[in-house]
Length: 240
Image 1 (cartoon, rainbow, N blue to C red):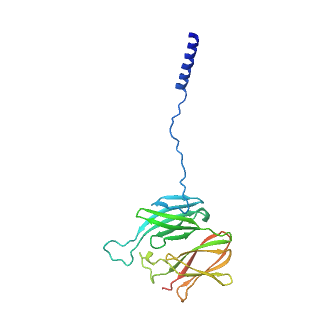
Image 2: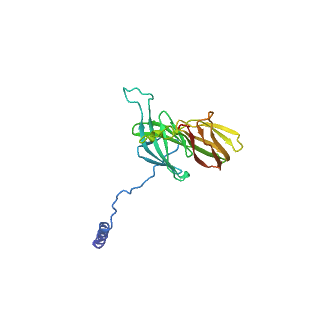
Image 3: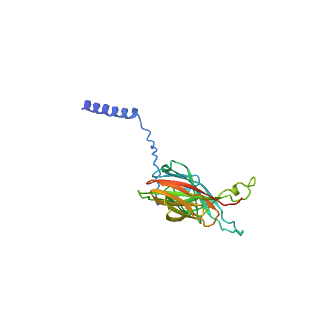
């Protein structure tokens, strides 16, 4: 009996020694990085200089928030607003950075690069927006553009170049077929921007100006299915 007891005690001592001398795990928690997923159609809150990624290769950064509101006890022609400037990078558009501005009063919703960006709320430090994908028919393309007018000064004085830069031009735009038949009309907004969907084929984009001035250039496009392009249209004010 003593023999078996001794054997059992030696066995237990051996197990205890193994457990004591065997490598111990540090039991430290493993850092698991889970990508922050943002959904289209849901409010997304941005802080200044914060970047967020969305499915499909869309990346947004809130660059700045501008406050043009009229100060207290001051009479202003315009009440002003809070507006947010975003930099967007879309892998579908060759990762070329673009900027959009969303204001609480003007340009609350902007179409760019196949998406609609809508400003929900804004403070001096944060902006909340909703992003939606613009569905394009397999037989259609999307055309976005910017119309600007200049010169706006007869003489550009040294140090005031920025004041005389081209300005956005809100106007009516005609979309014509290659045979000069009017397909539809659209309007550029207060920031001179516009977006429209068109079937594949050849098109003429022509601002509708009834007077001799300003004179605006027209754009000839040949669109393919599913394409998204941006165009720039310059208008001559006639100021000299």
